[in-house]
Amino acid sequence: MTALDKNIRNKLFLIFDHTTVLKANGQPGQKPILDRCKLVTILSINAWIRSRDEMVNLLFSAILIAGIACVFILYNGGTVMDGKLKLYGFNNLTKTLSFNIYDVCYAKTRREQLDYIKYIDEQYNSERLTNILCQVTEMIGAKVLSISKQDYEPQGASVTLMISEEFKINNNGSGESVVGHLDKSHVTVHTYPEYHPETSIATFRVDIDVSTCGEITPLDTLDYLIQSFDSDIITIDYRVRGFTRDLNGKKCFIDHDITSIQDYIDEKIKRKYDAVDVNVYQSNIFHSRLLIKDIILQNYLFKIDTYELTPEERLQITQNLRKEMIEIYSGRNIYD
Image (cartoon, rainbow, N blue to C red; front, side):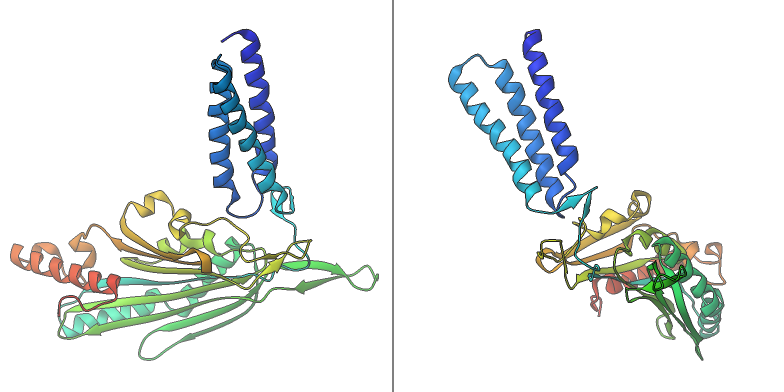
């Protein structure tokens, strides 16, 4: 390749990279397509420069032109500024993240099971749950409007936070600022301790629902929420409802890229779980299930140590725990 050829290639790369940087953050879902266009175009540039055959040059020139045209066509389909979709009025999209977290424990006697329920009630009372939800609210950049919390008898607790994304407006030119709340968002949590005397297994379920409207999104809180509880089985649902409009009046049914909920979970956390997705992309519905891979028996025993059990008992308890987890994970009574 001559110095002139290299100079031509570098200039083409520079132009294309500049175009991609400016245009790649357009409508949701465009970036993967743009990345593929860029790859094809770069390969075409290299082949075009290296080839001395007229027909081959013609072919790769056509591919090159098509690749660059693809970028401009995709870009011109949306209204973009500084990487964000420019909207008309307020963002009316509602983003709801709902998930169940299950903790499983082996408690042999009825007394141990009741003690486990009492322990869970103390560990996850309404006060601690309120602190967790307030942290979630801060993480998504929202403000707490009101708090409702309740501890139940004989067990369980609930907390609801009404939250909002705040903005300031001038009050009729008086110079005073008034805080306005355009969105309608909430964060809720409910706990359900449960046991059955015949199974020797107790479970603790946490239901969490984070629903936001506006710019704020609940997906960034996943890692924190998973780590806030002893999570053996996790069922997560995420859905985007409603629509908003861009400046030209075109409807927008989702304002961010997403292919899987798992994309928003840290790799270190995901390595601990087996996971499966069930997604309905055309309806903006996303579902993920996670099941803990390794059972360290001591972590699942309540008021008992592994050395107090015989090898046969350890094996039987581990198998019972795994069966319970698999049935909860699959949502079916598999072993009946």
